[in-house]
Image (tube, rainbow, N blue to C red; front, side):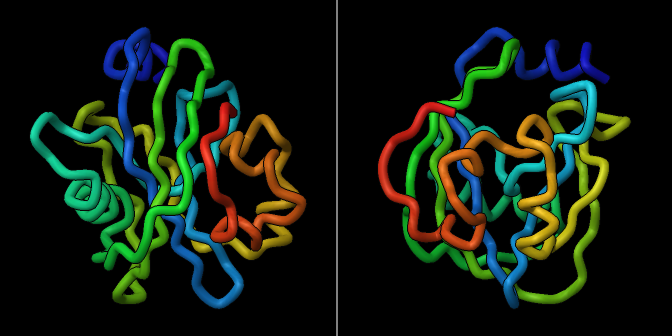
Length: 157
């Protein structure tokens, strides 16, 4: 699977839209296969297509990855994510998801099998319990993951 990540996303700069979706003291995260040797949990999101707005991208990505429809609330922060072979500028937005049925979706760019292993609303203590290398670098900026909707600025992770 790591070869697929390299083929579809590696060694090029991507601009991504990502959604922070909090519900009942839990955070929606996607477990990606192939980004590291182990699990890698990150908020849902993906690459913005040419001519596509960030908000349209986010609605599309949530549908593809989680099966959920979302309402985009506000822009929160930006990250520069660099973990070879990946390099992305990520725009994070607060979103509200409609519906309760989550599906572990697909990444259409990568085709089949999907790089998405699992999608879950994770309680804060489970997010905190993940090793740093198994969760998105943005979590290293926070004393507690529940503060993620308060984060503002531009960060290198």
